[in-house]
Length: 361
Image (cartoon, rainbow, N blue to C red):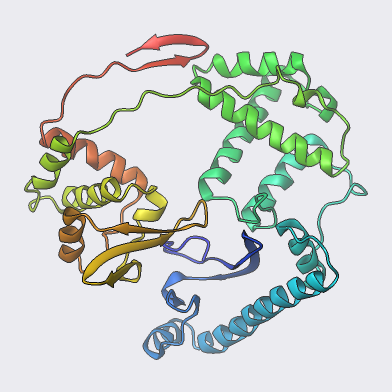
């Protein structure tokens, strides 16, 4: 599933590994995660869950079986496509395998025969990210956060064009435009990393349009057309501070209690939020009397094995080996309150560049 913890329907993906490449292909089929078997990575066969679906829709089981057949076809066609390309001695990449599957499932990709303006292409590019038609160089679907960033870029790009009373073409992406656009973003008091992210996304879009033959403008590839990025000041906690947070009595505030537990697990296993926030009993294994966590990292596709720290062990036992569900936004909000309750109130000076000016706060 694209979004495993979604409360509504989410895309179902084919995921495979070949030649040390992770490969992901969208089936364009969707399902609510409650009807998904995470052990077998397929649609559920659990009768009570199916009966639950039938209560909401009497045709549920029939549609589930139809969807199951479609997914099985995607699996068999992926294997068949890979075997065919191997027999033809083709050097297989995620892109080539995707193209072969596109042919088999009659999916069309944009070609240079269908010209799109820059603004039209930006709209199509974002739509393809949403629908899972466009993937990373490793053949993986883009994350929801990445999609959000591209939509944010489009908002700023549209506002810039409105302010300048013009519609930009591919040829309009020049060094003069770059300097003016950066000045426009600085005028909004954005950090240098935010401005750099918008430039980076424009460069990715321009490169994608170039590969499709929509333009021949290489200005965006010049060294001065740079997506600037600076290292940000990072505030960290000491072992003593972590222990103080862990020992806090928060039983009267379950929201803060759950946030604290999830945060401590994240610190102790040193993984990204997208990985540690979905830990369940399926991720816990035992060998020679010792428990450890195994996760396939969402960003890298790598499997990692992590010894369980005693605080993590106690937290998992407390929650029956399933971490409380909490959004990253809420975790960030609640953990600040937890930190204050733990007496972590030291002032730290942060230096950053906003609007092109270095400031301290």
